[in-house]
Structure formats: C-alpha cells, structure tokens
Image (tube, rainbow, N blue to C red; front, side):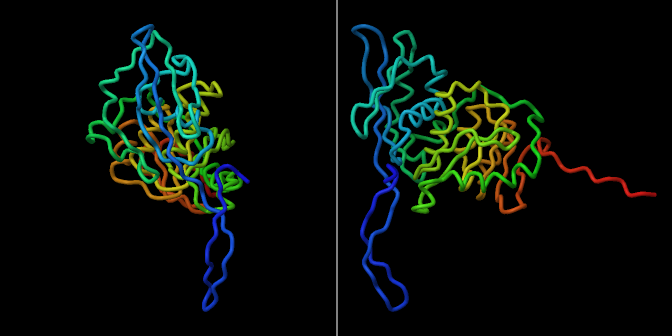
Length: 282
C-alpha cells in the first residue's frame, strides 16, 4: 500500500442499493517542526509550527517550508534533519547561523486547506523575496503549457487511487517534468517541490523553470514561488485578486484556468510565445 493511502470501510449507495466495502482515502496527519539553533550552552530547541500533511517526503516539506518562509537562506545553513518520531522532525541549523526566534513566535498552525491560517496578521504573510525574475525570460510556447496537466496527472500515483490529493510539479521551460509531489494541502505540495529542488542541488533562483499546481492559485502559492525565483506559475484553477496583484508586482507570469488548449494569463504575458502567422500570399 502506498504510504499516502489508507483503506477504510464505507457504505456505497447507488440508487436504491447500499453495499458495504473497502475504499481508499488520503492519509492526513500532523507534522511538528522543531528548530535547533545556537551554539554551545546557548543552543536551544524551539517548536516552530504544526502542519497537517500527507506523510512522505517530510524532509523536503521542512526544507521548502523553511525556505519559503524566509527562515532558511540556503541548504548549507543546516547541520542535519532528524526524524524525532513519526510526526515530528527536528531541523538543526549550523551553530554560526543566526535565526531570529522572536520573529517566529507567531504560534502558527497551518491546516490542509490554508497554509497561512493562524498567522498573527497579514503583515506576517508576505515574506520578502531574495530572488527576482528576469524580465521576459524564459519564453514558453502555449503548446508546452497545454501538455503539462497530462504530464502531471500521469505522475500522480496516489491521486489515481483516491482522487484526494493536490499536486505540484516543477517543469523546465521546455515542458520536461523535473519533480512532482502530492499532498492533501496544496501549499505543502509546493513546499515539497521546492524542498526537493534544494535537496537535488538545483541552482537557485529557479529562473528557467515553471511551477504547475493542480488546483487554484492563491496568494500563498505565488508567494512561495516568488521566494524560489520562479518566473512562471501555472494553475488548473482560478487565481485570487491578491495572487494576481502579487504576481504582477514580483514580475511573475501567472496562468489560470488551464483546460485543454485554453488558459488565461493574468500577469506578465510577455513571456508567452505566441505563434506568428504567415503573411498571406499577395
């Protein structure tokens, strides 16, 4: 059995018939993130956050979460990641790395629907990006975007069995799938993808890549993509007004409502390669 899937028993109703039987559902469990910081006798362990997630790729989730929250600057800042229990992970920073724990004391609880629920104020949501997209680059052809949903779906092993997981995929600008991650929370799926890119040693900013998500494009997904320097965010679903504003301000091309060979471009359309029609013969 896939670790993201659990068998439960249900009553399946069809018209006037009711039949008991097994069903497969997505696993959802809490993950506590702990930070180890400081040197010598001053070293301390701090509880940072609890996030509801689908178990699997927890180290990547931690890396991506810390990076997109602006806590982790680079992979080399970490000493190690230690699995403390099934649902607890300790992130050990190198002793010489300073982490502003006062800034982190916001008692954050992220649930599977909204990764920013519980933050003290809206001011704590928008993290200052350290990377900025290159204007007009990379250029992506519409045909490349049309093929991304099928590539994403074909790689979604757990979704095919349960229908209950969000997916995020990192593509090259030519449409090659680099990594796909699934999770009950769309924000977690994005964190896992970015954490995987860090773990793989990909060069940041991810200026030649496209991030695609299986659901809507909310503010937090744009914020996470901008932290990684991603110039493209493509979503099957709708954007929000705040996500469009943020994408425009940070120089990101935001695509929504990708269906078949149709989609909407909400910001920075100059990166889209439109086919050039041949001139009619005189």
